[in-house]
Image (tube, rainbow, N blue to C red; front, side):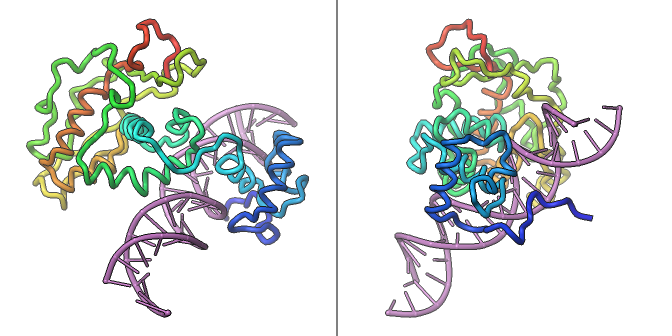
Amino acid sequence: MGRAPCCDKANVKRGPWSPEEDATLKSYLETHGTGGNWISLPQKAGLKRCGKSCRLRWLNYLRPNIKHGGFTEEEDNIICSLYSQMGSRWSLIAAQLPGRTDNDVKNYWNTKLKKKILSSGAFPTLSDAGYEPVISSTTQNWSQNHFHYSSFPGIVDMSEFHASSMNSHIVSPSQEGSTMSDSSSLAMDYKGLSLPSTHGGPEDGGILMDSELGFPSDFVNDLLFQDRESEVAANCFQYFADYGYVDMKPQGLNQGVTNQY
DNA sequence: AAATCTAACAACCGCCTCGGA
DNA sequence: TTCCGAGGCGGTTGTTAGATT
């Protein structure tokens, strides 16, 4: 038995929003707010739409100060950097980009940025995005040699690492002085494991288990299957070595930042 | 000019989490 | 403590406009 739908799909309009619907929704929300209940909102506002649809339309399109398109180089770097840190946590990534929505960032990544990085081999660092390492607790002796990609480049032997060595935070430039949650919101644990390959061929090349570390295994595997010894792959490993386990803070900030992301 | 392809983005779907009853 | 409904989220699909053949 399936899950009960959130609304009567037979009696709600679907598809693109008309300007009239937009105006109705916007007007209602500006006057009344959500009233804490999106589900009942369309009825109150006189819209034949699902509450979820109204919410999405408002958040992704009608909300004030929304920016569409025209991502800057800096935003590109931030997205790439954060994606490499936390994977497809689009809402968290979008939170670092004022005026951007998770849907926007997600679409932009899927249609442009992903291809751009795959083709260029340039994997932006957090430094590019205005971050710099503050405490290098575990990485100072790391090198690509730490990664056992001689047996298969897509597989990183993480067994030597222990969660206790992990104390990773990043701080966004935009969050200086903010009251963001503590580092637990981005706590990275070590559930992610890598599976060694027996032969090293792409066909049995093993799979990077989805990691709560946030390192996007699918993306990494894309890179590595593309060319196991490519500069991209090397950059990727270096990137991981550089930033996977360090505390980060925006460049130019004082050491005593307490509001960590 | 028509057909096809591609990129961009809007919208939907369904699962998960959380808070209140 | 359990249940249920609403909100939030990420993945996926649909639509459309522009480019290319």
